[in-house]
Length: 440
Ligand code: PLP
Image (cartoon, rainbow, N blue to C red; front, side):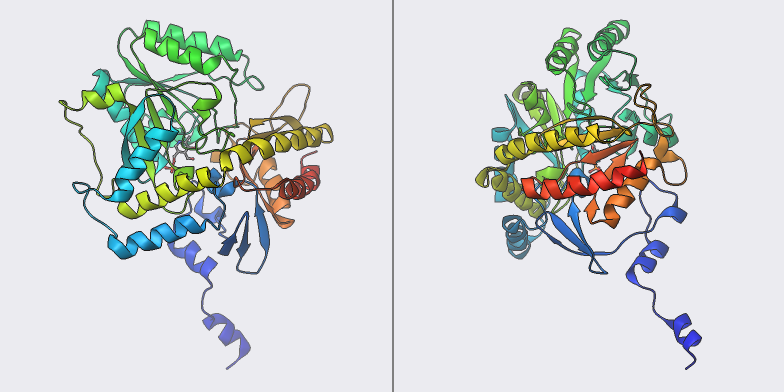
């Protein structure tokens, strides 16, 4: 057979098959070029060509346990063998024990959990619960936020991903953010603005929904007094505080939850990602005893086929036990402080680094075209435009040298698996040091 004939007949490789038959998420499909990955090990993963990457973002800021959590893998196998699925009307030991465990590790009197399969669904449930509990319909959320992709959760999302789903569900009002670096409003002033909004809306707002530390919109850490005061303001107006802990939860900040950094117990908390260490899809919405009590005699009007899936709950329980048994939260706090120092030293050497910020192993490097004017590269809504942005180019340069680092809206997002060592951090920061030359 002629060689050009055999080339024509050559089977498509996995990446080509995928590109042809699978939608890439949040992307112009012509620009999607998936890399096939074949293995994960600790804080590293390997592609089909044998290239190894240090995972400096924990994939989508979710692989908090890294890629070899044996206890979780064993729990999944065991549950699949014992009985993979039973309807939500039945319970299983992993489901009941995970509910109990979450009541133990979450702050205050958060006590009863609705299980789902993603952060998006966890947020959907939170919105519905807040509406059913208060009998009010409006939700205040903030502009620099991401809460999910279904119609309710994208409607409460503030970043550009919401634009194509608008006008979205009725009753959502957006508030300004505690974004000291990039906003003209001081973070505490932005809070008083929310107070004013609540006053002007009368008694019609069910909840204020925030990420306690904003994740994909740039790792925004508010001042210490912000979240306690926000809870006070919400309660003064008979509105609930919902904290979306999908990204900030499970040790990412060096505490169990972002809310713990500020000593706040929200009325409703959403979780996913680190909850199962991303070993299986799992979301959860936990509520206080008072809210749980309300539904004793009021219909809880919500559910999914896979709510409390036994395999997912077995993974979640094993994941939470792994955080505890391996002291990963304390470890994240210790190495997180080291990471913070290394990143701020890095900033000193690069004119294109506007600010490094964050807490624990949850950090961002915001790039700037002009440090004095804090001018962003491109628009801050860069993710709905075509083509790569400067921050994409920095991520690519890092990947070429073996470090995977995600980015969003002009910011490199550093959120490695919690077991990362100081040595791994040095290696990754060294690669970023070279990659940042692209934006300088
Ligand atoms: N909430 C926050 C804070 C998130 O960061 C995300 C995803 O990144 C979501 C909700 C949606 O979660 P999922 O992608 O699992 O649906």
